[in-house]
Image (cartoon, rainbow over the protein chains, first blue to last red):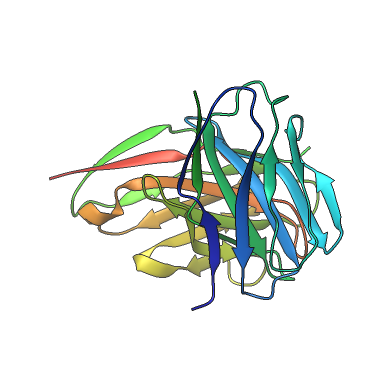
Length: 111
Length: 113
């Protein structure tokens, strides 16, 4: 089955610790995206990558970092510099036409 | 700057009744428009999309949407709502190709018996 996987589904971390969220796709899509979702805020773009070894900041990149070493993988690191990291994180990939497909999400709770 | 407005935060509809969710957008070029649906704690699923052609587009689960350029709107409709349609709905706009999308803040649909 082709799709996007995100792991883990739930993640708990202590304040001040960095944490990495996994995103893998087997759709052979070139572009991948990370969004943050908070209640009543919709989706806000953190980072995106259109090709391997290249990525751009989105609207709320501060306190986050990414890498894109392989086409199928786009991990997101939430660093200790992110002031309010507790949120639902969604990964997506897109076709050349622009239609985005989403993973099931990771809920991060910082204690 | 591009933006999407979904004026209704919550909408309650009786099961079997018709539904219309509103979406207004601001975009400088030819817009590529989407509607997505999200169940609690899940990812987003694409309902339908519009880039060009017939301004009335059909999607999955019996949904349709109409693009009205003069009103900068892309409203989502369904003639008869089922209890399983209760979810949050997001409208999004972007450009055709490798482009970022701008999402509205969502409309939560509640379905009453």
